[in-house]
Amino acid sequence: MTNKEKTKGVSSILRVIFKITIGLVVIGILLFFIPTTSDKFAVFNINDISKPISFIDSVSAPHQKYNNFILIKITGEIDADAKVAYGAKEVVLIKGKKTPKFQMHTSFPLSKGKINIDVRHDYYSGDTLQVFFTPKGSNKGWLKIQTQIN
Image (tube, rainbow, N blue to C red; front, side, top):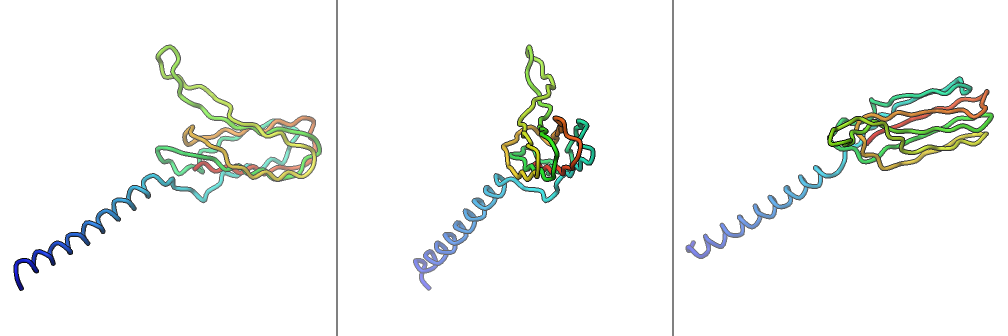
């Protein structure tokens, strides 16, 4: 085997190793930026829908540095209108100081009858979510609210 043939063989092995390395780097970068999702939902059952109530979901988040969205499922049946809203404490700068402040994000008006809401919203407010239920004359019915922070 001549030196030229040896060099050609080593060169092709190095090219293969380089391609494998680049492939592994690309896979690593993709895995780093793809958010992990949790299969856990926080579940809140409301059996007395005549009273306002709030819940805190601090269990469904995967507790990673950044969250991207939340899933909210609301099912049930009510005899009058109501509202479900959610928000979170966020740190804001007030006069140069980091100050915790509660920020309401979204509300869902619920109409009398069967309820079936399944939505996904952007959410960048950390690992905790506060959910509020406000009846508007409801006396009979039930609701199940499920949240998942991803």
